Length: 194
Image (cartoon, rainbow, N blue to C red; front, top):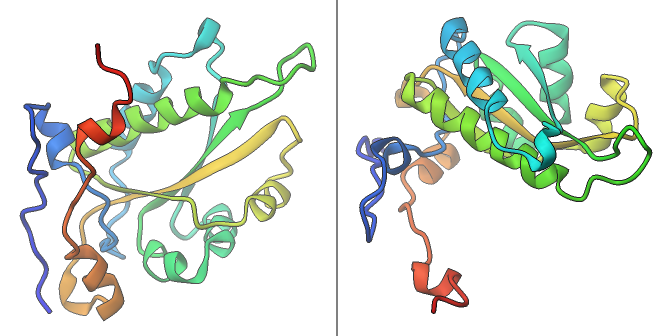
């Protein structure tokens, strides 16, 4: 099976190229280190995401391939994700600070951390990195491995790295890579538009 190389979204209205071109690949170069300048820029973009009351409730665990931290995150992934994500130059865990300094829950923290993850993703893509966000991981295992308190909630793991060669990719991974990019129509998402 060959890899489809044009993954640009066919949008119904014009959007920024970085949005139309962004997708979530699973084939990484297992030998290339992550581009540190591009990763730093992605984290800087996340820093400038909007947040309620400017609380900036996001935190990141940035782990690079070959480190003990990377292995800990990798072990927390579900088996399918572990199989391909091991090749990514970095695994970044996005955390939400869900409890404020006053001990009250921060209801908007997950939303705000999600925006930071989106900013990180778009900047990384714009700088030539490939990025794939994953929900398939054991949150408790990540919390335990890094000694996180109950105020920090792991939300997603983001594989970050350099595109790899599809020639050696697993058939199940290739099948997902070649699956059509689809989204439901905007009219099905917008409940009120008057």
